[in-house]
Amino acid sequence: MSRLPQDPQLSFDELGQPLRDVSFVVLDLETTGGRGSSDQITEIAAVKVRGGETVGEFSTLVNPGRPIPPGIVSITGITDEMVADAPAVTSVLPSFLEFCAGSTLVAHNASFDTGFLRAACERAELHWPKPPVVCTVRLSRRMLSREETPNHKLATLARVLGARTAPRHRALDDARATVDVLHALLERVGTHHVYSLEDLLDYLPEVTPPQRRNRTLAEGLPDTPGVYLFRGPNEEVLYIGTATNLRRRVRQYFTAGERRARIREMVALAHRVEHVECAHALEAEVRELRLLEAHQPRYNRRSKFPRAVWWVSLTDEVFPRLTITRKPRPAALGPFRGRNTARNAVEALQDATRLRGCTDRIPVSGSRQHPCAAYEMGRCGAPCVGHEGVAEYEAHVVPVREVLSGSGDSALRRLRATIGELAAAQRFEDAATHRDRLVELVRTLDRGQRLAALAAIPELVAARPDGSGGWLFAVVRHGRLASAGTAPRGTAPMPVVDRLQAAAQTVLPGPGPLRDAPVDELGAVYRWLTAEDSRMVRCEIPWAEPAGAAGSWREWAKAAAGARTPYEGAD
Image 1: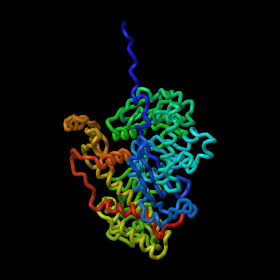
Image 2 (image 1 turned 90 degrees about the horizontal axis):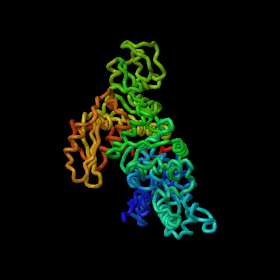
Image 3 (image 1 turned 180 degrees about the horizontal axis):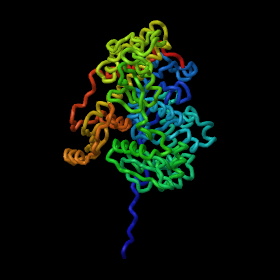
């Protein structure tokens, strides 16, 4: 008798990622207050666990750049002296995000910790990777009855569940206590048929009916890197995102782990999910940026207008001045995200060089009978009344040209000397204002000069290991990703490189320092190329930055931004 064919047994991946294989990063923060938008982090700690075992720990104090309120000191015990020599959060975040990469975040009252981290990433211009998040407060409310615990505070749960570490409002001890609480709760969820990460996220409360109804939209997606597009009832693009594993990432939108009200609203409207498979994460990020610019979906908040930036450059006049424009000149300073930031850079350079700030077009012989107030204050040499000729005024222009081209830094040194003079005169608030403005100027110069150096290269090919004995390749032309591909283990890599170069997109350089490359795409490519494991395969011309570029000021800017100096005013 013939036997009917049986359905194949589902794989673990089809059932979801088993909890024993999930890397959980259990984190805790100490801060100067409760508002992520305005308060600062003073300590970060995290414990990475997998299969019930600890595989790594991360812990550091963080200099908040401001005094810690006495009330917070009394709770945490972290004083201003303890964080005086600690790194700034901008220095800590890259290594912390690397520690968390590919893991599920866990925290007690997770919205507090992730809110601070998202705000810090935004201020540091770092991409928040949107990892899955498990909140042990919500999980304990789901699992434990009032008879088992009087409340769901971490100290109470640690005592009730027998944690080996007692929380004491210090980040590492609290993270270790949360690990024990997490493991105790996970031991119980199995009786509720929770065996995978997807089950766990779905088990938490607040899954809306539309989320449950639209779960089928994730079916059929591949387990590969790529870009996904949620489309609405009229085929309009509602939301665009990127993922290293498309199916796993899209599934998360239909679990309780997704708590953003706007995204839940989007999921309720979605009718289907379209996807674009990519060779690796860089191609996915670049495609996402290009699709965001093309579709401008209403539920995305970032990178929809990548060319909406500002530039500072010298005008073509007998007596040049600095001007702020949308379109850059060949030697321009930028890009700036906001006009006010560009205005601060202009004022800093004017202070350092006595460059004129008026908008008049001044002929060689001058155009006024009396100078303006800037001359009386010693901030301008008054070429408008003939007090300075073209040659004398050019002495003010040269330092600005040097800064913009990266051939000199005398203007930056003058600004730093001014900060010291103000501090010596005990004008601490003015010194702090000048310091912050110089830090902002140095960072913009440094970033712009690094990106411009990359954009100047007609073509380069770079590779990174894929972690399995193969290679990931990127062909970059004038700062844009022109082609991407892979050579799996056992595949000869150089023939793959030849094919990628032959099929690469033609890129014609445009005007300006960045050759008209979108800033976000250029930044993504730069980060990928400068990662520690990147290898240069081919490069048409040498990749080099100007000898006098602002890169030599990078460490000073980090120290000035993170150090709590005597002239750091109270909030």
